[in-house]
Image (cartoon, rainbow over all chains, first blue to last red; front, side):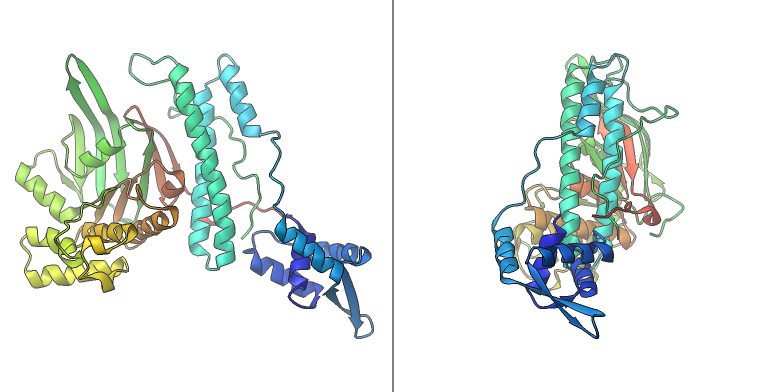
Length: 199
Length: 243
């Protein structure tokens, strides 16, 4: 997430003080990513240094308003017209753990998948409830993004379970593999949300 | 959430087997599930895992091979076919993927139908049906026929029909099947609101996003409940993080 571009976008709507930028940012993105005021001022200093914004002091230098410079305006236009880079395939902790579980003798890979799915589903339920109880559109939009990503992870876990269940021998009772039984300790799940969210 | 002491739906050790030639197929194996008024439970699982069988047995459409079902505290096992039909009509509402609305009846008439069949007076049936339609936000479409409604609106009529009267147990089988994602979400929201108003809702779905509307999610595999998740308590909602 680019704080720099977010601030430039907001300044494109009019001159602003630093604290106004922070409030505006949080309101427009559903308050999901809290921004500390230090980050705002550090970013503004860099933007000024690079000629993207100019500053205007009042009250003996105690109040500073920022204004978008022409270079900054061009930067914003370029930002809108180019996609956020799609993440390169990188390390995926859950995929790694399950791949390892599937190839390690004595490890119940289905139980590992179930524990992971429980964690993601709980986070999905929490996100859903947070979305229901929130009221502003910005928050719903951001919550939907997190919800759809969590759903994708559950679908992948379901898919993986179905694939692996096919190769696991079926026991006499008709159940496949060793499933979670009461009293058995649940394997630790990899934390479900990659992105921290605060409401 | 208001929870009665007694579950609106209680399934105890429910098993369903079919004989197919020389083999016996187990569709449900020893399923125990309580659903309380004010609670929404989602049932997930791959196709063939027993989801729809569970719903059919819960709604007294299908008799179990073994085990007990209670709806509003009333055991179904000893009831005659006529009494079972009465329980279905008076206590249980169904929502199906394909709406199952009668094309020659208006929304209001479709919703009033279960009460009409139950012998309620026409005035009572219509006034209850109006109230149910208003609850799903379709007060204005009471005199529309199904083919004059969108898919999402038809499904909301089906939900209204499922809740009309005193029915507290609402069973939905893939209710968003043919709907686009925004309309599907509105249908789930409608079911959630019925639970918040005190109905016990069971929804069968293969969609994790839709299941997330429920308080509790149970997973079926090969006819058994193999897993269950429930939402966290509100205070533990979402962990912190900054940019």
